[in-house]
Structures are given as structure tokens and as C-alpha cells.
Length: 291
Image 1 (tube, rainbow, N blue to C red):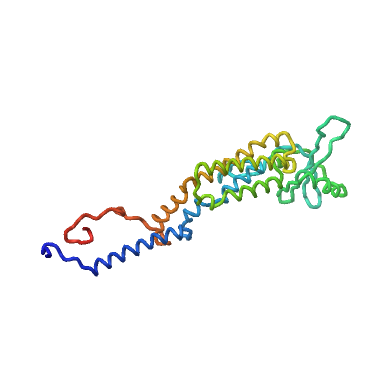
Image 2 (cartoon, helix red, strand yellow; image 1 turned 90 degrees about the vertical axis):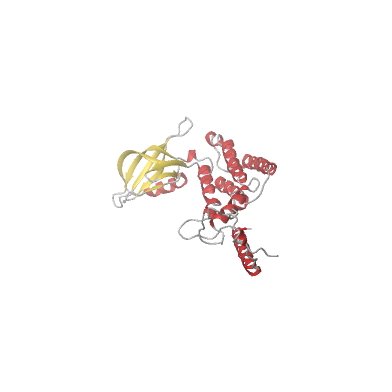
């Protein structure tokens, strides 16, 4: 018996509404599969930004090179470690090129005389080029054939190689190791606390063995550079650990999935979730879909 106060259920209408719900569910599932790696119009993809590893590796490389953090009107930037030295200024009258030569005294006392080292070259436009000590002798030999004008002494800023804890080989080897740990796959994995501790223990032991066996080859040939041995290992381990902590229990993956559902449910374009999403509509006896 049908109650006349309530309309009869329309099977076709219910079927149509059910299909709409299925379509919406499929769209949400599609957003999970895509995980939001499309490039939205007008702004950087938030998910891609959160998984960006280049910036992390860039900071690690600057640390290993011993670069200094400096500031200007545009903000902070990295630069080679520098020092001020007193140099003899010599200029070629024809080309107007200036050569800055430093008098270096030997470390040990004895009968050795101070040697001259070319540290910087300045062209006619005022642009500087730092000269490595290995190239200094060859260039100075060529300059001896040219009559240069002596312009006295001047304090100049040059790269301080003594503040760089590692040479190019050392930086390249450690960066190669770090690049295998700091990856998008690490962020999107699911790790337990025990597994993270195991990984960090293994990495710490092997990294220490590698550096201990090769620290001189890696450029740590002074007491100052050797004093940074433990600091380098600790910093690298802390950076890697922070990346793995983001994957503790799959937290980063879950966060990005939630972000993809809210901001990109259909796999493209921004989407604002309605304020009543997920709430059951108010019951209405004249609307069967609210029953």
C-alpha cells in the first residue's frame, strides 16, 4: 500500500543519481592516480614543489664547498669563501690589463725567499678573474717577457682555498652519495621508525669508513679541514634523516593524496571544495534522495 502523502520512488531517477555518484567517485580516484603532477595554469604545482629535491641538494653542495652566505639588496646568496690579501699591482700599458701578484712567505723558517703568486687578473673593463696557484707560475713566466708598469700595492679580495674543506673530487663523491638518498621516491615511501634507524645506522657507518679511507684524497690536507671531518658527516646524516622522516608511516604520501583530492579532483584545474561537502543533506519528505 502506497502512502499518498509521500511520492512513489522513481527507479529511473534513483539509477541516474546513483550513476552521478559513481562518476564523481571515479573522478576522485583518477586524481589519486595522477597525484597532481600536471602543471596548473598560472602557478607552480604545489605537489611538485613539495617533492623538489634540487634545492636540498644545492644547499648540501654549497656546504661541502665551504661557500659563505652573503647578503645584498636582493637577499641571501652563496659565494666562495674569500680573504683580503696585499698584492703588487702591475699593468700592461698596451692592453690596460692589471695583474695582482701576492708575495707568499714560506711556512717554515729558513733561507727560502718569498715567492710571487699571481692571484687575480683585471681586464680593461674592470672584470676580475681569479687565478689558481697551479696556473700562476706559467702565467708569470709569460709576463716576464712583457714590460709591465708597477702601480704599487693594493688590498684585494681573493678566493680562500684554505677554507674549502673538500676538493672537487671530495665534493663530487659525497654529492653522488647524497643524490641517491634525497629523491622523490624517498619522500613518497612508507617507512617505520625502526627501518629509518637501520638506514641511518648503515649510512653513518659506511660514510665514516669511506671518508676515513679517502679524506686526504678528498682534499682534507690541513688541520682546519680535518676539524670539519665529523661535522660534515653529521650534517649529511641529518639532511638524509629529515628526508626519511617525511616518509614516516607514509605521512608525506598521505598528505599529497589529500592535497590532490581537495585541489585537483578531476586531474586538472583548481577546485574549491563546497563548505557542505560530506555532510548529509537535511531530511525532506518530498525529496527521496534525502531519505
